[in-house]
Image: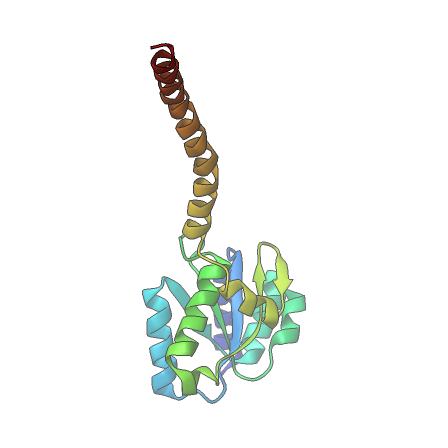
Length: 180
């Protein structure tokens, strides 16, 4: 690859990566072309993108973007997996879950896909943390739990307030019965 082509690739990737808030780097060594294509297709269906490039190009791109620390995790053939900025898929949990889902569906090929680390909300995360992110429920489920948590005490209060007049009516009825 000529220097001109490399410089152009670095320029294009830098402009794309500058706006990223969340990404995961994976090592895909050992994946066959068909498996890599299947992975890309799976990720695309989730709204997640994957870029593969030579390590030197990725390294220079990271330097250009200001992610020098991330250069440490570039080992072997690596790919950057990310969601489109501002979209529903620009979420570290969604990105991690998409990768883990593919790994579990494709057991043999999934062993070849190794988390190297990532970047989320301004900080670098380890490969272990990326795996842990995949176990967190999606944002919508967490918001649903939170809403349910708020709703539960209000529901109990409504039941209690509704029960007071009924208890009072039974008490008055019992007193009236007792006086007879």
